[in-house]
Image (cartoon, rainbow, N blue to C red; front, side, top):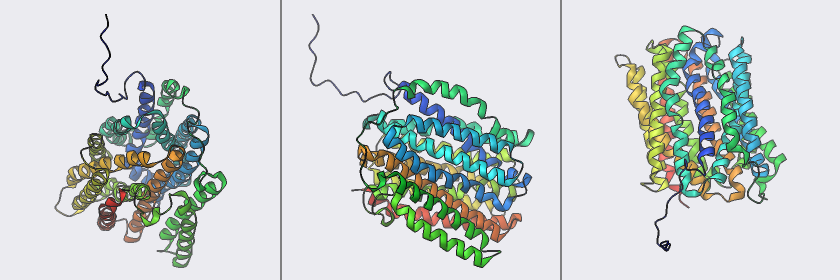
Length: 462
């Protein structure tokens, strides 16, 4: 005789590695691990690339080209995913990303390298949004903090070995191997992803009918925003040598940003309206504060403190490890979302300010290691909480649009802060003592951005 079922059986939360979700989880994590290797490696070898291609003045643009292209792709992928499901955008994004890697590895001129970075950005932008939509439509709300934490944990192995391996490859072979060496891993990755994508091709919600659901206006707004960001960065670069051209370009860029950006975000986002609008904007604030410093750590350590590329990569390694730790802790829900985001922004600000010490005379450059653990922890705690909270605050038929909005603020914040930092380095100068001064100025500006996020985080609450 079987025992009767009890009505008060304890609730078992879904397991992301259980039979139901194992395939999707492994597929997502595999691709993110592959992307993470590239992300952790490029920052380490960029000083070497800039020297070999004689383009240190385009150091910041090499990062910004990736980010601006991603910005445009984010919006297209969001619309595509909302209307047709996320399988096709996901696969297209991976292919574009790999083509960009091949072109970068073969580049013999800086113009080709920048174009390759833009192609990588298109692929990464499409892939990132498709992954967010996949998570929202595949996993129940109780499981989402866990999958986002696992997503950050996918950076752990690349963070531990990626920068050091990239540095060693650049030292012993060539920086080109950093890009080309990842390509052979793509085929097995796509083979393993087939089961995870087989049953996830269709949309699961009624199409949205709001202003952010119209493909042509949204594509035009995305193009205006991307072009505006590019013009602003170009104008900032030109101010030193051609003030009139730089001023006109910057003004035109700001006009295009003002025209396009509000149409890509929820109403009231640029005013930090309470709830979803501020949640989405906080991703851009955190990204600007963190990546505006992160991109220049290898340059500062190599040029000011004579670190090798492999040694300089350790600072980025520790930042990613801190990120994974912060992401894991947010999944335990020990505090309200706005409190976790506030603490994350505060950690980014603190870590940045301590990193400033690494370029001062008489201070070891290794101080950047513990500092960037703190900053990375803040990003893991804050950024992952922003992603989870955005999905919770989004209607099902706007998950793609809001995922795209998250990515837009992320990429725009990173692109503008890195581009502005690169322009500052060019204005101040490229000698070691001038790079040190430029790094100090960049850190102070980005710390102000992080402090702004600390103050505004409370507005995440509805």
